[in-house]
Structures are given as structure tokens and as C-alpha cells.
Length: 372
Image (tube, rainbow, N blue to C red; front, side, top):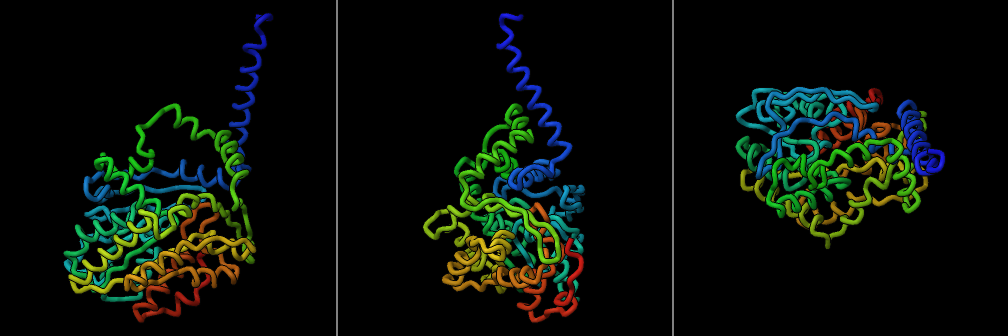
């Protein structure tokens, strides 16, 4: 044993050191760099049970209920008879149908303070049906409208686009279709199209591995992750590298970019055929809002898509300027780690849509509370 001590002592010492470091980081996860913290948040987030569909990709189960808890927020998921976030039963006709991903769903906040509910409360007598589902892509928005929205004969179709991940989602959904629509798109996308691997799963959940990987990635990034404080002293983490793939796809020549535009155009045409108006709403990333206030330029994906959509004759509500105006006043419009709008951010979105509908509400306009 003495003779071969280096062969087992060194690996044992390294293993013990790694285990001690892992234990320390689990006790003090706030010491992880920003990039690692956001990955950790996604790992710990409750996985919502979804049901695969060969055409839609997936839906949530009807009358499904679960609580999502993270360090950033806690909220309830409660689905209607079709798996969406609406009151049951559905109306025979809706005045407004909204499609989109988690930005439309209201991820991170309770349903009654999510922006579709805020809009509905300021439009008494109008029925709004929210077909937004987290983790979906623009091609799916079109398909949800085809299957669930057209029969509601809405007066307006609101097509929500979050360029920060919709460009990526469009590419992933196309790849899923090319692969033969194998099972649940939600599961397929989350696993990168690979079958689950227990060893890789353990390594990916290691905080030490997250730390090392984040440090290595940060060395090669032009836009560094950082934590900032608003004028009001509230903290925000900005992780531009999360959108590295979206930056690459934010090009009118990219097939994913064209896929987003084509989905919106097809949805617009379908809405018009059924007598509905169409408006696209573009949601900004928090990095595009707060980094320029820190003197760091960051690309606005929304601007490129806005130009392409308007070239197709589509009406666009780009929320970037509205968010920047409130952020410049020191307001915290997003969660600390997660990139979704908080309660105040949802109010900004509701105000913009209400203005488009000719029903802007001063109570929302003047509200500055509830931003956590």
C-alpha cells in the first residue's frame, strides 16, 4: 500500500476535496457566479408534467395542478379543461385569443397578476382565452391557434414573441419535425434530443461542475455575466451568454428566423380569414433593458424581428422602449435570477396592450408597487 500510495492517495484526496467543495457550495449557492446560478435555478425548478402530441408537440394535462418553487418565486400552475391557464369552462366565443410561450403564460407570477388577467379585468364583459404554454415555439403558437383558437372566433389574435428563446425554439421544433416528431417535444427539447443519461445527469447537477464550466465559458464571452443594483437598491443578475445561440440565429437569412416570421404571417392570414385582427407583441430580454443602462451595449433581438414583421404588414407592439423607460426610473421589472417579468413587469405589458385596445388604465399606469 505504501509503495502504490500515490496511485490511490492522490485520487482519493481529489475526490474528498471535490466532495467538500460540493457540500460547501450547496450550503452557500449564492457564491456561484451568475451564469451558474441561473443554470441551477432551472435545474431545481419543478418539471411540469406535459403530454406529447404529434402535431402540437405537447400540451399540459387538463385540470392539472402543481406548485412551482424557486429561490426567485413561487406560483401555482392550474390548467383548464384543455390544459391552458384559463378559467373553466371556456366560452363559446372569445373576444381576444393570445398565443405564445412562458411570457404569455405569466411564468413566475400567480394567474390573477399575470398580464392577460390584468387586461381581462380592465375589459369587463370581454372574454380572453390564453393559449400560451411555457417552452413552446412560434410554430406551436400557430398550431395551438388552429386547433383551439379558430373555433372561438376571436376579434383579435395576439401573437406573443420572445426573441430571446423563440429563435432557438423555432430551430428546435423544426429539428423535432425532421426527426419524425419523436414523442413529447417538451421532453425531447429538454434532453437535447438525446436519451436520458444517469451519469451525465449527476455531473450536470454538480455545483462544482457548474462553477468550473461557468468560469471557463466566461473567459471566452464578450458579454460578461454580472449582478447589478437598481436605483432603488434591488438586485438583478444579467447573463448575456444565455442568449448566445439566439444571437447567432437573429439573422433574416437564418432558417429559424424565417420560421418565426412565416409562423406569424400564417397565423395572421388565418386570423384574417376568420375575421380577426392580428397584432404581434415582442418581449425584451432583461439584458437588453438593463445592460445599456450600465453603459454596456447589448443587441435588441426585438428590433430585427420588428422590422421583418412590419415588412410583412404585421402590426407590432415592441415592449422594449416601455421597459427601458421604467428601468431608467430605477424599477426592477424582472426577477433577480430568472429572466421573466415580475409583477411590475406584467403591469407594463398589460398597459401596452390596453393602450392598443383603447382602454389604458391609470391604475396600472401609476402603480409602482408589487415589483417583487
